[in-house]
Each structure stands twice: as structure tokens, then as C-alpha cells.
Length: 355
Image: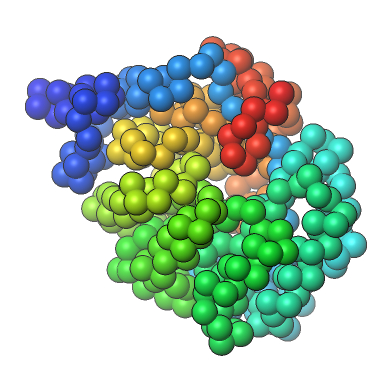
């Protein structure tokens, strides 16, 4: 790493210079992982000087695996009529939430495929009943892609879908379905999904009307480093405008037979994590991905810019369907945070400390 780039890196860590797209690209090209990690850690400690690092307890409930998109990277979805196709029953959803509460959880992440048989009224009825049965559980649900699909299915504006779901209990929106937010990449790996501008239209409206969401990135497939930087820039631009993203979460693509790519290793993951922390200076929280990297790299990531260990994730189906099956208990997560030199604290989706 040359002297001028080191100077840029140090100023970004101190908060006296904002990284440009050109800076971010040069940092991603660099192999000086130790220096990148040190700078990202310095920035994370500046933004989060408290002696603790956070995690939460929630559950991914994938309400259906029927999906019209059939993205090339996905091992989870299937066609309508496939013997493996399912729509989860209400009773099963309730049982899963009861188990989550028993384990100390206060949120469900509700996402699924684009199933033409599940209309907006289905979700309205589900959310209403969840609110009645589990008033303290946050519904973190439906990605921008699912919202846009419901609007198209019903022939109504996306904004109307969001307002109707808000009325029946939708509180926060996950950043899923982002993958890489450039149209070139999306056309290559998920051509039936919404394109970049539409993803941001959903998020912008939700933020402008008082809602919060997360932003994500799945990298390590057909994208270039330039595509990754463009993704970060679009996220930062919207955050500067709305301040609606609570966190950014990046993870590596888990190779699947329909999109065979060489698996990205932990070195590249930690580099991407560090650059994300340094570039996304207006996004308050960076969450690590132990689900794709394992607990040891997760622990290390707390010194590469992440201030949140992510979720206990009582249930996870999508990444697991591609063969990656890391598991952890709450005690293991707390022990990892402790061994990294921090005090573990449980939080909710708004990063409010619960205990």
C-alpha cells in the first residue's frame, strides 16, 4: 500500500476524510489486510466507544419456497408444483415464534419466495394475527423484491402495499434481495428480480415515511470490484439522504450448481468488511456474517470493523440450502464476543440494548 493511500486510510479511520469511490476501489485491490483491519477497527471504536458488542436473537421464517425468480445463485427456491414446494401453515408459524420467544427472541425475519398464490390479503391477515398473538415480537419482514412483487401482483402502487402492511404490523424491512446493486450483475444472476433503482425506490419510500431497514450485499460471484464499490456508493447516498438504514450486512456467495464460482475465502471477506466500515461512515452499525464464515472468523471480524455479531439465527434455510451449515448457541456467541475483548450485549432490531 503506497504512502498516499495509507494517508487516506488513516484519515478515513479518524473521520477527517471521507473515502471516495476511487479510494474504496484501491483499498479493495490492496492485500494489506492488517492495515485495513486496523483502520476499520479504529473507526468502529470511534463510532462505538462503548466496551460492549451486540447480538440479537431472532428466527428466519421462510414462509414459502415457491418462487418465480429462480435466481441462479439460489438453492432454496423451487417451482410451483414441485414435490418439495411448500407454504408454511399458520400453526407452524405460531409454533416457531413461540420457540423463539422461549429462547429470548423478540423478532422474526419473515421472508420467502415470490409465490403467485400468496396475495397481499394473505400477508395482511397473517400480520394482523401475529400482532394479536405476539404483540412484543417485531416483524422484520418482506424484502424490497417481495414488496415490489406484491404491487405487481395486485396491480397497485408499491407505496400502497407498504402502507397496508404497515397498518397491520410491519415495523422494519430486511435488506435481502440486494445481492449486488448494479443492473449488469442483476441481469446476469437474477434477471427476474427488481433492478437497482426499484430496490432503492422501496427503501427510500419506507425511510421517508418513518421506517427503518437494513442494507445487505452478497459478493463473490460474477461481480467486479467496481460493482462492489458502486453498491456501497448507492447505499451511502441513500443513507445520507434518509438515515433509514440501521445496519449493513455483507456475506460471501455460497456456490450452488446453477452459478458455479470459486468460493471466496475469509481473507476477501475480512477485506470487504473493513472497506465497508470505512466507506459507509453514515451507516451506524456493521454486522458480521458468522453464518457464512464460521465462529472463529466471526470473532476476528469484531476487529475488522464489525460492531455487531448478528443473530443467533435459530433457523436459517437459504444459505443452508447451498451447503453451508454453521450453527451456534447463544452461549457460544457471548463467549466469542467475550474472547474478542468485549462485553456481550443482547439488542433489538433498533440496536437498543435489551440486557
